[in-house]
Length: 84
Image (cartoon, rainbow, N blue to C red; front, side, top):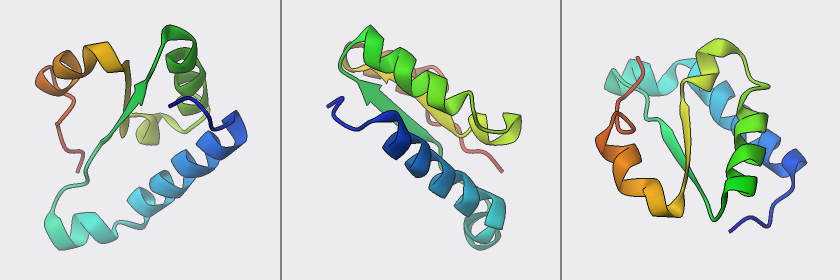
């Protein structure tokens, strides 16, 4: 709901990216789920996207960021694609 600061967001993103890089999920299931971050407004969406951009190019692909009112479009236009 837009209450966590950038430091907390970056920490969560890095934790997920580290798990991806470990390859555990891919070895067990053959895919790795993407994460859809939902933001209440454009300002928050841009803040989350800014944190995602600080990741390596390979791990950036794990995350999709959109506003609450655009969630249907996000999940039907490729948001549910798994990364291997």
